[in-house]
Length: 400
Image (cartoon, rainbow, N blue to C red):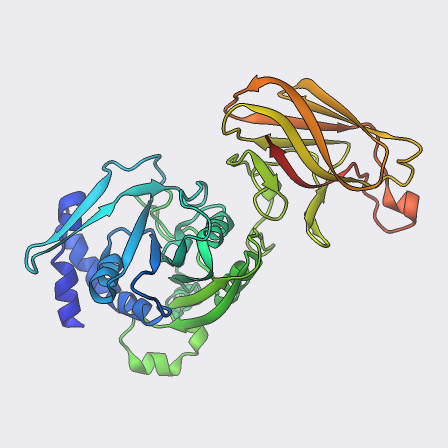
């Protein structure tokens, strides 16, 4: 371990880009056992494996992967600012005569789309990053799921909020929340997790856990580790694989009022995949039978981000009014408060409803509103317990 410490301390990232070489020495001393333990969780990989490391700075883990495993690693930095100050980092060790060049791609991982194709990576590393996210970790996990190959792996590490350090602090009247941080809102630990919370968060976002352990990587006391139960260890290590179609889940123990969250990224949405942040007023909770959908009320707002000029809006929807065949339902479409289309629906069942739009609209953000001529109440019409006034059910919306 001492040899590995000496090797990592010899690299000049903190000296060159932070102006504080002592911080680099502290980082290695503090995190060396975690870094080495992370390597123990690597899945089987070939020399040609495609690897992505999120939150790679200060690149110590990246360097170990490249030098000792011969892996090519794409790196993403995590900042709250819009773009990195430099396009790449040249990290050198004068002692060992080594240097590495890392692309400094800066993203907000709970808001931005990863600029990589679907099914690209054999392994995505997300180490000591989850706890820094502020509002929507499910977005990051959904993007990881998308970019992983079907047989790829996610290797994630994060502090265990139930670690004995925190339990003892509470016992003696000390606060366990992180301090305010000069590096901004993402510099501190905004939300730490229990093992069960992490397990559920991965599950609802489409991952199957192959291995999840709690390990002590910051304590050298064998006696303390022996006396305390595993649930009190300091770090959670998880290795998981994407299973099935991409999905995005929001466990109730972690999320509240996400219907008020707005983050418009896509020209189209699919319920259960990427609708969160695109919906305004007028929607009921997500439901699922063969696929995910949401019911609207009499009015419903949808926000989309066009990639360029568009000519139509297509909606995969269900009009389930019991009397729709004898009394058609009219759906009116507004774009930024201007009526741009109207459709009369006289059939039950799922179908594609297309609104042709005049002109080449090239908006930065498009606000669509659906106005449903009349609703229906399942309790009144069908004798169920459902007292909601429903408009139509929608599975997907796409600008074309």
